Amino acid sequence: MGFTLIELLMTLFILGIVVLVSVNFSSKVLEYNSLNTSAILLAKSIKMCQNISMEEGVRTRILLDFVDNKYHLIRVEKLPKIFSTYYLGNDIAFSWTNFSKKIIEFDPVGCPDMRDVGTPDKGGTIAIKSRSNRFLYIIITPVTGYVRISENPP
Image (cartoon, rainbow, N blue to C red; front, side):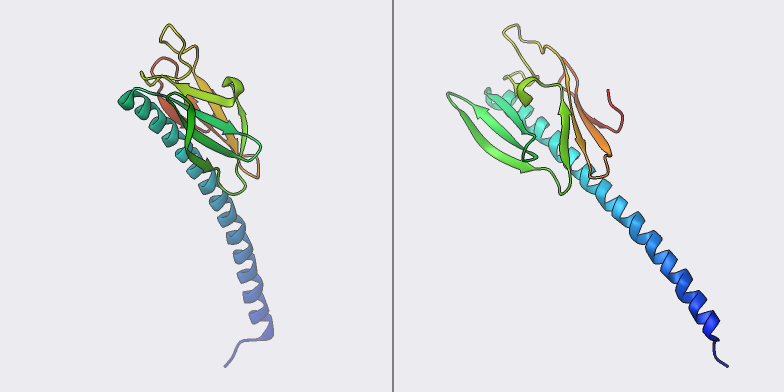
C-alpha cells in the first residue's frame, strides 16, 4: 500500500510551513547575535583603553565614527595615534551617544571624560541598533568607569 496524493500534499504543506517559520526565527537569532557580538566587542575595547591608560600612564581615546559604523582606538602621547580600528557587524549601526564630539577619553587613572580635577564629569552611553531597530546600550558608569551592556536605556 502507498500514500495517496492528498496525504503527500498535506505532508509537503506542513513541512513548508515548518521551514518558513524556522527560517524567519533563525534570521532573527542571527541578527541579535551580530548585535550582541558588536556590543561585547565595543565594551571590551573600552575596557582595553582603560587598562592601557592605567598600565602605561598615557591618555587613550575612542573615536566613534557614526558615518562608517566603526570606531578607532587612539593613544595620545605627544600626538594622537590610531592603534586599532574596529567595524560594527553587518547591518549594525551606531544610533546615538551622549559623549561630546563622539569621543571617549581616558586619563592614566582609567576613568572616562577626565578633566584637571581628576574625576569624570559624567558617565556615558552608546546606543547601537540592528537592521530591525533592536537596540543595545553600552553604558559607562561615572567615577568608576565600569562598563556594562543593557537592553534597556539608562
